[in-house]
Image 1 (cartoon, rainbow, N blue to C red):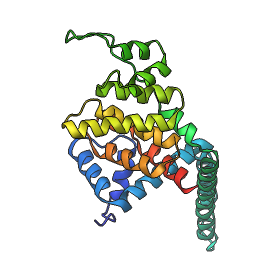
Image 2: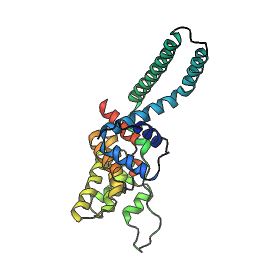
Image 3: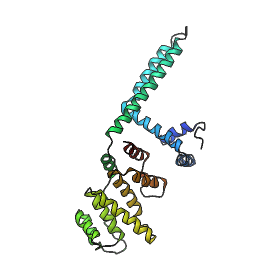
Image 4: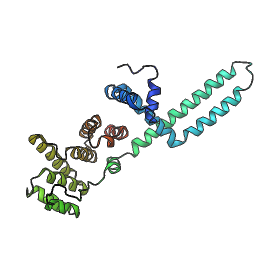
Length: 255
């Protein structure tokens, strides 16, 4: 796809600002999903906006603009105004590049797998109501009380073979910062669902497994899952996988 379509950059800015709606928004999202170069351009716009906001670049650019306009009020006698205009534009461009570069360097060196994990992790809460008349299992009781070691023991002893038990064991392992056990339990959920042709807690498992991979510094596996979730508009955690999150995981991978 040719992402140089006239007005495409303006559409990206409108989309970034939440101004695109309806068909126009859906069409652009489809183009972003299909065109890597266009997605990279959008990511660059997001990063530039974050940089400008972070360092107060708006005020600085506004000041330079006012100064430039004041000087350009002088009657044109020589080619100096054009030179001044070029100088000021170059100054603004250089400043933006410096700030974007500085922001990226700051982000790159201060980012960590634990920070990304903590910013996106929320403890899974079991429902307190039972609409189908089923009883609360022992493993659910232990999970609710925070007895995470017992939750893992019950699952590993196969005292409860339900998919939910495997999932809760994974969540318990996350609470105990045991990445290996969390990853093992979550993969057991996915394998069990695939074998049975079911989807029990599948979306939840994929999301928390991707975070477990991040904390375990297995960034390729994390990105595979995150991209899968992001591309699935019907996924429960579709909105949780943001462009920013994926960019952060990519930065961690490049370090």
